[in-house]
Length: 453
Image 1 (cartoon, rainbow, N blue to C red):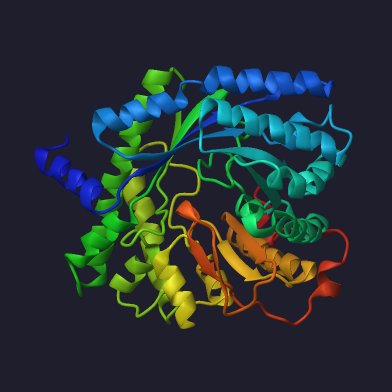
Image 2: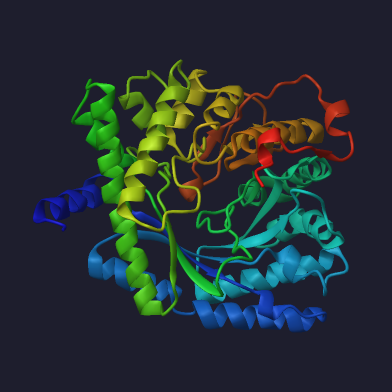
């Protein structure tokens, strides 16, 4: 039973501590749109998305107004496009046409982003998968709202190193084609163990095991967690853990309310609440600041991985008590550009890519929104990706990379992305070569604990 004190606490979180529902994401299956004729396919994709999502933005705004809960983004995810376009697409340019259809339709219904320009290649690439991957640079640089993801490995199958090597090349090409806009790489993420129901961009896609149309909600609230920890400054670990858990419970209940109400008003089933702590560039809305409140001078200082592990675990425990349908990524995001505390730590030299790699062993995602020198080689990018995929494969968790080579920039420079993407310092990468390793053909085998039948 919710009492008036809890209502007042939640109101304070919204008004003073940047608590919000980060996104309502409508997942839409496009399996019934498949056709061997490209024009027919694109027409069916437009009609299906428009029919399902035409009221999504209006409904989100009405819920926000009625309940006083900020709902920052309204988004769409679709079935991985490599599957949808396999019969109709015979070139990379054919897939780009689908991307432009998705972009135009997303603008027509008014959403912020559309995810699902994706391929799932953790065990190998079909011809359609490879064509879509090779189309990514043009698709992302000639559209505004389309986001792309590629799943390169899993605990059950290992890592497709041919696809890893290809993605190293595609990320460089996307950066080069994006030029000063830099929007291409910010909309591109590679995964190991990608979940089917993630509502957060750029990695959202609608898995083939999902229903026809599903509503997933992503909540946030690092500011609320930090404020709660300030009230017990210096307390022991048990008190610290309990405080994080209770705050995560309250944050998740807000997401559950919005998800249920959106489901009722739109007439589509509620899928999951993703309770990830997702930071923004706003002061006070930082995961790094939570780590500092726990006793670290900067994120990246000794003890950071332990602090992040505890934070992530308690967030999940609190969220699981608040909703029976927790999914997606759920935990703590550590993007460098979107978190002012992370930016400060990187500028101070406390945070390196290697330390971030260690932190990704215990957090929700991985190396997220990291700007690197524009002359970083394709093989070095592929090597960084391979390391991150290995962490996810061996630890049976989701890991990811969203790397942004910035043409003309080097270590010591910074880059402005604007909006929620913020700004980022150019971080140094290890300059020792890995060419002979990543240029080997084939697949890294799955670890021994993958065999569970």
